[in-house]
Length: 366
Image (cartoon, rainbow, N blue to C red; front, side, top):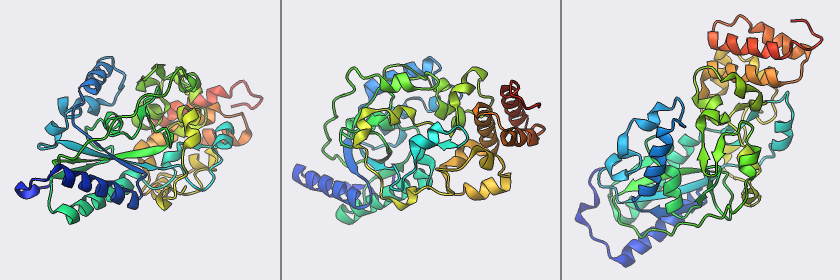
């Protein structure tokens, strides 16, 4: 928490209301589509989260269990916190990404739409700091700390309490006027701002997201088993992808959008005008073979400033090998796989050999 906090200032209810309205207006000016205020009572979310952890649904993401109650009790993470300013920013690119066409073409690489542009952590963190600066300009020094998916924070329950949307059956936040294709960021603060009202759940009897999941990762309404989720398998998992889940990955080499693409509320999703989220390196159209040919040095250059770096180069090749194993058998694909049959990485070799095995029934002799 930034020091020199409030300097014993006391604000009236009217002043706090005016401060809140100014915060929200400045948030919009800085490129957020909505800003809300939540208190720090996350008791219900804490219970659900701890049960989820106990069931092992977090897989190898051990960091999720390292901080005790700090994740669900903001004042323990940042002493003095009494409110959380939650903000959302749309990321769907204005430039057509031919999403469905890309996803249905097994020779093309599908990358989750949020990762096509600049790393969102950098974009949102900068804007939230600017928002904090605007508050300081308004009232003077105050206590705050910025978070963007980078610390033990229950961002979705906070966003729900702040009135940004409800947590859908796919466990993403859904806004009734904007769908779910947006990022979240937070300002923990000691300002006793008036809080917003949560939005009621409007998923109803719909099960589209559950039904469409390629690996059946949504094991029950509002419950995601990360160990089966393609986003986890292609980004967070650092080891071998379970063999039984590889066919379901299809051509998805970094993340998965299926549960959001099918959600009826995303008919209200707004295209982002944020230049930082414009697709880079032709990633919305590129083929699997082209990406598989990237050397580590070239990958390092091409993914600079991108969320794609999260998977690492070894994970990148692993994911591409699986996707190539799921692609139609062609001489070009077989040749690309054979080139890395003896790769220095055991992890890559394993997945390349699996991919080649998938093509054994073809007329091409391996």
